[in-house]
Image 1 (tube, helix red, strand yellow):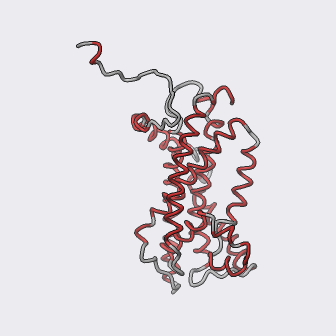
Image 2 (cartoon, helix red, strand yellow; image 1 turned 90 degrees about the vertical axis):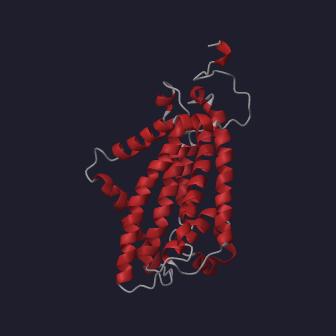
Image 3 (cartoon, helix red, strand yellow; image 1 turned 60 degrees about the vertical axis):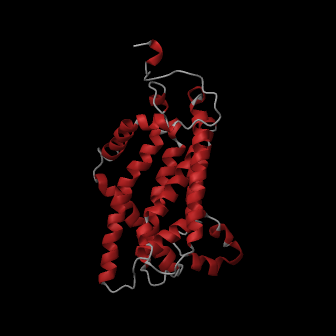
Length: 286
């Protein structure tokens, strides 16, 4: 066979392109992606007492606290949806967003030992976190469904929205926004370590602006001139649409949900460009 007709497995060449997403290489390492997913699921609670029960304890206890404080004390009205079920549905989706963002924003710093020893597409790590997070998300969603049927049996006036079969759209929007933002933040935290503290603090504040524990109509009624902070928050629109699809209630506008999904796709694209450019020399920084 002539030397010029041989197909090489790897080709070493300078990266001169400004935008180099290289999806072909990511697809070639798909087995490694699933290996990381399996590792995350199996080992995260392997040496704990309660194990996977932590998947359930955290949202359940937080929902109870939110119900006591925001609904019983602050008097936030959730309409025909029981307050506990209302809070749990928002927390399930918010928890997935928070974990995707946290894992993506600390990719280089948390895996510097691994990245310094062997080569593979670094974006595999945050992608595996997002996929393994779906396992935890599915368990929490199952618990949400159990409480849904419990309250339905108790006579609560709840029913899925007419577009319930599109429930995957809010999940895609949340995951894309979280990963896109995380890709951008990990490039910044690689150089400025104290930004990781700001991310944790900012996420705690962002939760209160994302309609996790209150409906948008209630916020519009009580916040007046400050309502725009929530109205233009894509996460609030996604969580509101997600809650309507599962529990019913006042039908939200579908346009903000589609806009949030489009924003997530754009942020994913921008984040991947920044992530790949940071990947080339991050080891010298960390």
